[in-house]
Amino acid sequence: MKSKDLFRKGLLAISLTAYLLALVFIFYFIPRSLARADLELVIKNAIVRARQGQVSYGLPVRLEIPSVDIDAIVEHLGVTSGGIMDTPQNIDNVAWFNLGSRPGEIGSAVIAGHYGWKNGKASVFINLYKLQKGDKLYVKDDKGMTTSFLVRETRKYDQKADASSVFSSSDGRSHLNLITCEGNWNETSKSYPERLVIFSDKE
Image (cartoon, rainbow, N blue to C red; front, side, top):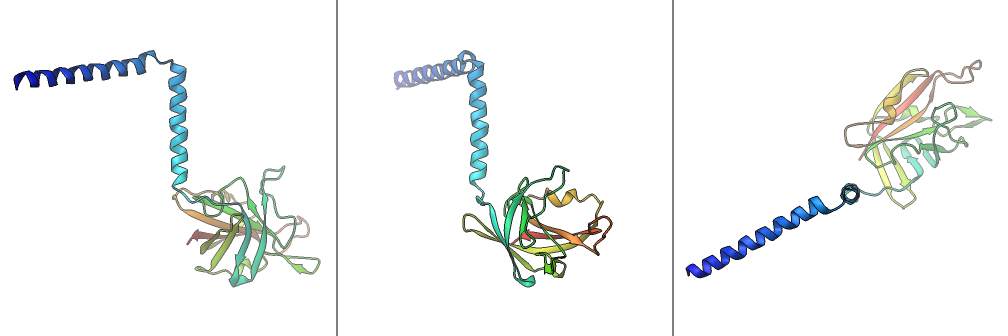
C-alpha cells in the first residue's frame, strides 16, 4: 500500500511540475505582441457575447401612432452642417437620428417630424401635442419586427434651450423620444419658438 501511495504522489508531483513549467512557458516565452493580440481578441469576444444576449434591432422604416392617426415613412438623417439634427425632406415623413440608438435598443432613440402647414397640407406631427400618457407608439424595422412604446411624458423646450438630454439616457432601458416644433410661426425668424418632445418607454 505504501509503495502505491508513493507512486501516486510521485505522479502528482510530476504532473504539477509539468503544469507549472507550461505556465512559465506561456507567460515568459510567448512574445508580448501575441499576448496583447490575445487580450484584444478576448475583449472583442466578450463584446460579441454581450451583444448576442440582446435582441438585434433593424433600421426603422415606419412609425405608427394610432391615437393621432400617424402612419409615416421613417427617413434616416444625421446632423446638418450647422451641427443640429436634420429634418425630413417630406412633410409626410419622419426622420430617425441615425447617430443615436435604434428604436428598441438600450438608450434614447430620437425621431423628428415637421409641424404646421405647407401649401395647405398638414405636417406629419401637427397633432403630436394631443398624445397622452399611456398612448402607444409603434416602430417597424427592416427586419419585419415591430417594437411598441408607451408615452411617459410631454415636455416643451424654448427654441434656444439645452435639450441634449433628449438624445441620451443612463438608466439601462430603451426609450423613444419624438421631437417637433410648437407655438406660432415667426415670419421674421422663419421658425417656431418652442420644441415639443414626447418621451416614451419600450413596452
